[in-house]
Image 1 (cartoon, rainbow, N blue to C red):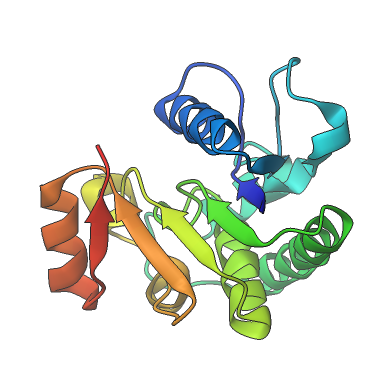
Image 2: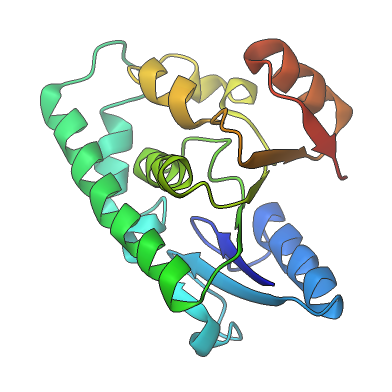
Length: 195
């Protein structure tokens, strides 16, 4: 099976990158092939199995600009909505290209559907899964409600749609029982716990 990991970045020693690497090793040891799409990679990530998309990174200037227009405020400017949609549309094209080019059978978004560091990426993944029905394991590390800076926002519509999405082809995985309880309580979504 060809498994496609998608994240804002798969580089360095942050928890998301380390967990993705751990999952990829286990899956490859089981005979699967892993592929990657992100805004940043470690140098050792095989280029022939990776798709670098700068706008996937949460530090991309356009993504940062949209974030500033979404958090710490309660009303979103129409220009921010337009930018979010433009970036989302571009990312969605890249996700479709990623799935097609690497013949992806299963997507594994790594924290991209839990914390809104890159809203356009979460929306793009959600729409792609909704349109294709591709089997997906959404691996969540921390949710927006666990971070104070995301609680005052002008994007409840996007958060309710994609962070995380409630779609039939998505299985959700969390890292502890507290997250499992909160996810179920807040969204009605059940998850598997893999510490």
